[in-house]
Image (cartoon, rainbow, N blue to C red; front, side, top):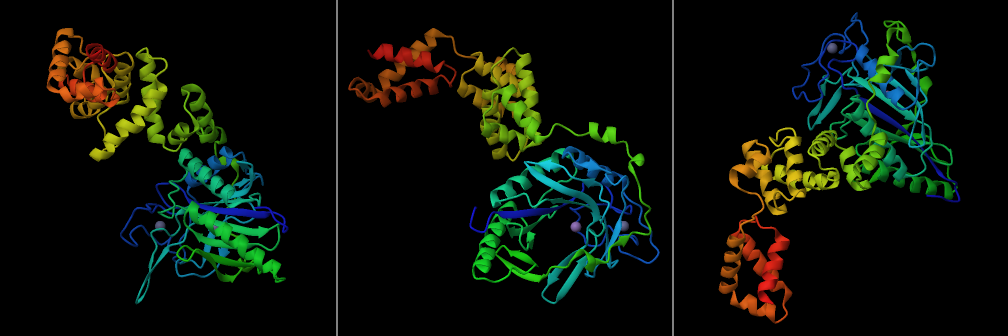
Length: 471
Ligand code: ZN
Ligand code: MN
């Protein structure tokens, strides 16, 4: 969107719950799937007087890992510390949130051309459950480790914001830093939106990528109208109303001074010497961008096929293993065929059966051998597809099943001859139709013969033979 007002300037704040066993400052379980309220709590995470917080080293390492993966500078202040951010809310039992103010763990970094301002570590609040006769509070999430990533206002459209957050979610998952599941609230988005770096409005309560795009587009149009009517944009916090598809004013925006930040007195500052940054760096896996390039060049997959794999770690691991088995079986150019077999026939079958790549008995090597049989002509394509169910049922290599059940391509010329005779003599109308020029009649006759031969005949040769007989 470009305009007389200049260009939209959008910055994002992204919160992600870290994937740790325990909470940020105590030994309580950090379990976002716990459904019983107030079971994973203790005096520390419910703010009892005198309870002392002890930082979770793993949580700090995950933020450092994320920062390094995104090209940021860790411990750029030479050290890092926690600060108290003071405010009242019923889901915040201490009356303050332990966060990081002026010495975040990570400064800088970049993703998809968008500059990252900082990444810091803080604790999450509990959750409120609003009922008709009052509100309930669950402190299971209270003090769970939370990473906050802030970008520069480098984003200029809703599409760009959506692409950035999608890629970031994928990276969080690849790094094992966060499950980043938006539906479970494990990744939460906020956008600071303005025209041409003017007064910015913060939009909260965005629960999906789609909502992010819609909120940005709505807010840009709203602000444009306000400006064009000669009014001033109010610096405020607005919420996204997903039902009525609009932003709604919540409160005038508070500044940092309103929170009376001060250094957390119970946790001393710390520096890089407590962490092995080389080990953390080495633990960064191949990231989505690198994987896209490698998959396209190594396997000859197109953009859509590559994206399907890059977005699903289980699927791409399975695929890679199967391709390497296929190479070992001596089939060099089967990677695309294997992709199609896997994502269409095999996943279709598994879905139908309520199975998944994790629970299936079809090992990657079995799928590779199935594709080998199909490409080297050991079985027909139709038999290959039927074999998927048989491999699942027996948990055996398809070579064995083909041998045991005699499913190889039919070479018995007499049987084929006899079957064709039978089909032609019992389908006089189709024969007459074909002779009268109706091509589809031939397909019908081939289908009849193939059915009698249980799909095991080579379809091209069968078609040729029937054609020869009819001419
Ligand atoms: Zn606790
Ligand atoms: Mn925050």
